[in-house]
Length: 376
Ligand SMILES: *Cc1c(COP(=O)(O)O)cnc(C)c1O
Image 1 (tube, rainbow, N blue to C red):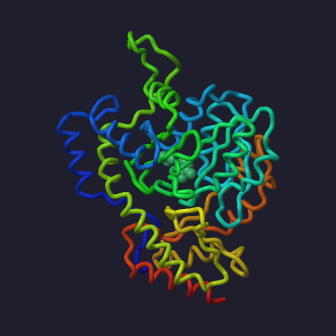
Image 2: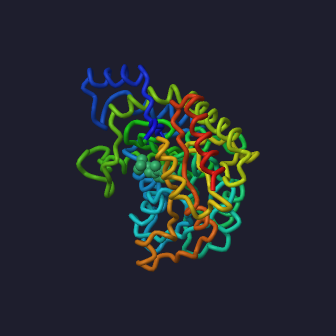
Image 3: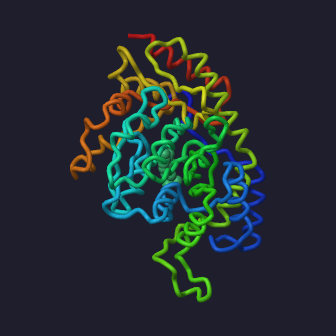
């Protein structure tokens, strides 16, 4: 090991400490009271071009709550079209409701769900489309929304990796019926653990607010309105979130600077496919995700171990739903169901993408990648 260059990092400023201390001083550390929860909801939903925000305990619970708060709630037997290449939390949320996720293969360039494949997967049981703005690049939403309108489907956006990304100038989280964000430690902004639903549908926001907090009664608190959940974000976490949100454009600009640097330095290598930014997109480059090609296409583990020897941390790309042994064994999917995702998954990894990385670090990473791919 020469030097340690991490894939990601938590960057906390003085405002996070000041707000968190304030919450501690007031003793407002739970998810039931304290001024930071509603401030974080108001500020983040406004930032995401939505009328309402509902803070929750994680990106996973945001996704689950969206599926319960849609009207009527997702139920066993229903089908949801889901982008196959994602963090499996996206699929778990559908399975929590006993519904059937139907994996949709990806576009080879953006790695997002391919809208052309949706129509052929719609059945009378289809209720929703769950898109994932992967690695910070927005999905091509117009064709998705058009199909949803024609078949009366709910559109849910998994925005866990794409805070602040835009599609034709509009923020992700405001494009479908509801957006689901994560504030896990490695996301664009963080509260340690946390999440948020964004929507401009007042009734959906009200149901989500109630269900995230045990669906307490209005007149008589302990006469519950529904089978609720405890998916609350704490005021202490929301305080950190408010501090993080004030810096979000700096974090994004840093991610974009890293992408520009790598694009420039690695663009000449014909053994590596680099992330894209379509004309409709503002990519926030959550992780700088690359795909090996040519004579390195089946040598990912060798490339990653040589980078590790140089002190460069990397991460293998996601394994698509259709290749998860758990679901193949249960007969829910077949490995060959999404061939494009399969081909990308085995060849992909991320380079260090921490906003803290200076040009010198990026230069070192780019030189090592070039050296490794230039040899053999
Ligand atoms: C991180 C992530 C999630 C899950 O969020 P948690 O806060 O870790 O529960 C869901 N979907 C995607 C695409 C993610 O990257």
